[in-house]
Image (cartoon, rainbow, N blue to C red):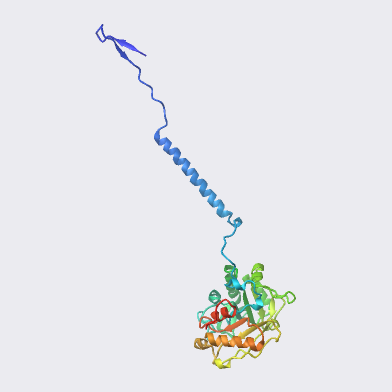
Length: 328
């Protein structure tokens, strides 16, 4: 619109223009808020995708952790059970840390397994209706049997590529032992030997989750997995006072039994850590095992010792298994 005015002067005209309209636009703060909302939405979507990926992780291909290691070594995976050497503790349950009197070991079963022991000698008893691990007299030390077997089962749960052997000096029935295996959950890992099928490799035992070879000195099957030890194992004498006394003479089990245990510990008359310093020394232990293999014409499978944490038993077993070079 245009307005005219003379402002009191008839000869002068003043023109007044209407104000220009400004284009409407969104406030700057509103635009920033929109961008923030978009960013937050993207972050939320990314978080949801991450959660879905974690939830579906079981379907994702496993990470490549390299070759399988059976009992700690790739070389042992395709070796049959009866061609593998196992470090085995004598009276495994009897240990100083848990305050047993006259113990044969310094450390409990679980620690032995963590350290590399793969064979256990366990003595089972019933005392006042309770199934226990004891050595001769439960008054000098004991452990609940189910509790001990549960500890072994937990080790196997956490270490799926490990195979172990247990020899029971059994003063309880096979049915009681079976129930303890059931109660502890160790039953899920038992191996049953089929003589007609031969011995499986460690890799096969691991794949089948039959990673516990169990046998008993007095009783045996049923159940089928609770083998009678002296049907499958042969050993040498087990009472020695001095290193010079170590013998390879066959003691229990038939000469054709496929597995061999070498008992290698000193007692004068009780076990002592200082005796293990003599017995478990590399040259002494290696000489005894190799001599027994030569005299008996058979590979040693179980090397039984006291005080596993003293001396060189794990090194000797690695050398016997061919996964470590022998000392010069």
